[in-house]
Image (tube, rainbow, N blue to C red; front, side, top):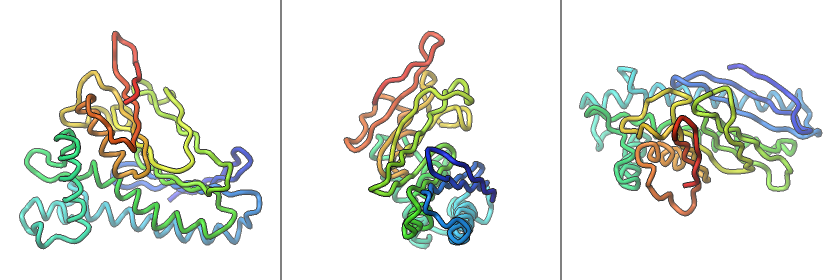
Length: 257
């Protein structure tokens, strides 16, 4: 785990970086000027250590690339829906619900095997955020927190704080450029497309370069961002909003979904 600190918009932002699940996770804690930094940092570090352990446990349990993970054991028939752990059952049931809600555009089955990575990342970020970052609001100087994984973010800002997260959406044709900026205080945002992992979504429409969905729960918006890559004509639930970036005549265009 790496830690960085910087001044931004009159606040101090602490950033902690973790590498697991084949991607980079970053948690950010925004402090005001009243923070007693040495004392607070020790408490923040404790929660970050717990978060790092949690993310590694998720990878160990749910990675389809580890032979002894629960997912691999399920695919080999060693455990069933009746004998799997409550967490794997939740992932299994939620993946099925997502498939039904998106009219098969989101599908956790790949080449005849259960491959729930597309759901697990967003779900694990949301759970880890609630368990290990939201409790930091017990310290008055903490103004905002977030957890980012593979470009997807769950965030919360103290109600009376003036802090706003400026979230840059990467240009799908140039990962070093920002194509759009979104301002959010609390909620979740997920982007799916070619900028993070290339062409990795089975059934994705060729002209759809990238999708971004905004809502309150990352496990939900992550599912819909993936689904829109496969079927851009899907109607989002009323509690969500999104953007679809398409390739037209060599240019990138965005439309609101």
